[in-house]
Length: 100
Image (cartoon, rainbow, N blue to C red; front, side, top):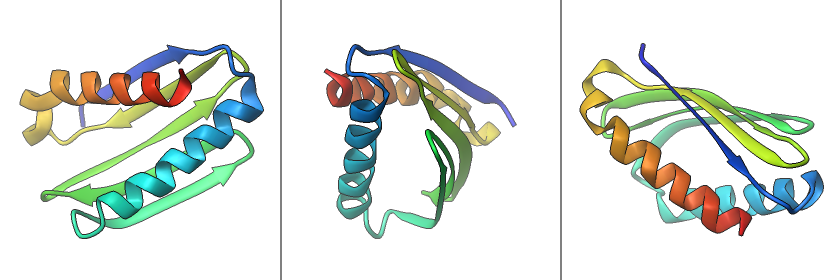
């Protein structure tokens, strides 16, 4: 599967960035109920391993919250590759908003 990686700097400190990210994930789950299935999220300290299905695509990856940046890695199905740029930009915009 093709991969996607991005890093978003922040100046919040690790605890605040983690708190904001967890809150945003809860809101996203509520907002996208019915569009996302088989959601699995496993937090281990500052690292989230996730997987879900949406619009027939299976997505999985991890997010690591560090003191001055958030790193996201994910795998996309080949069928979603034509949307990779839009997906990356949407994730980058949302992370920027969360960490502002």
